[in-house]
Image 1 (cartoon, rainbow, N blue to C red):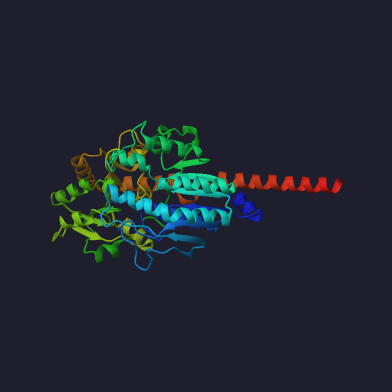
Image 2: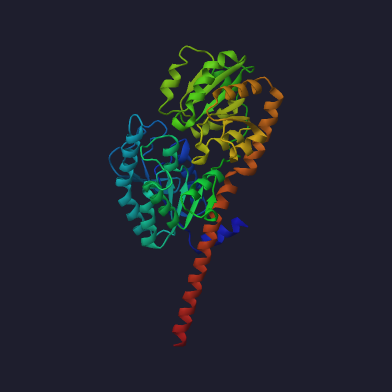
Length: 441
């Protein structure tokens, strides 16, 4: 049914969509990876996609080689028109440097977003949080051209600042920041976010609960699937008997690096276990220094998309440490690919949240802040091969049922497509009526 709907819409007129966000392809992790994949999917459906974004810098916090630093530019990527805006990237991201970083993108991108709106005349202006600083610009752009205005929240920044103590002015209920954010949320035609937990958090800032949609990150289960990773094992010096604990993702503050540190410290006490840490971020150097000259831990840089399937299948157990309270303002983007690889996941998860429900079937959920409980869960799975196999099979089923790429994107965009089709039909009927009136006159 959906294919017929998009086909009909494309025959009428493809949608013109402006996507406005800080992160985009070719970033390999986090928000940029998903925004890039979504825009590629939209272009494949026949829609015209225009992106206003920054130069790729995440998770290394360095603008990638080969990209301009202090100039505006544009190019074509997978059928998408991409406008790149300069921004300042701090060498060490901290409270004030992060804020200046976000403000620099706002200042350089706001004129481009407004101009893109006026030139493109989009049907939809979709802005991605982070950063919410760009949301007022998106609202203004949409209003000027009569476009549907959509905010998709990948990370509730103001709640994150409160939880992680990243700002002196927190997001307490009644604070100026919370009030302004609530006003912004109310003015968008559509607001979506990654999970029910994040939906509840956004509701606390004043957006009616029923007017917040759940639009989770996804995984292409045809690409990310269980495969034979024996060649990769051999290249890393791992034997078939080694139980591989894999951490793959950003090494930043909300990722619970203190738990990962304890896992690495206790690794020698877990017979047969080896740990592979893949990724970059502010804490990579600190963690790698703990494991100098150790044979039970391997560090790798972020891998390309082409190697991701084999890397995820390298794991016998996926590790997903998190800080307390993170699930209220963020949902780990790496969870869906972990599940699709058909391997069990051990994660630190707040009580009563969506992730606990998922991991009850395909992994082990432990309490945030309790690194010793996390290590104990590792010991249990390392010692029980049958349990690992059963949980891994359940993980694959969960990924296919809940996070499959086409299903997620069709559900998220289906209403937009049908609304736009109906609007086009109304315009067509109105035009025909005008013509008839002109003839009769």
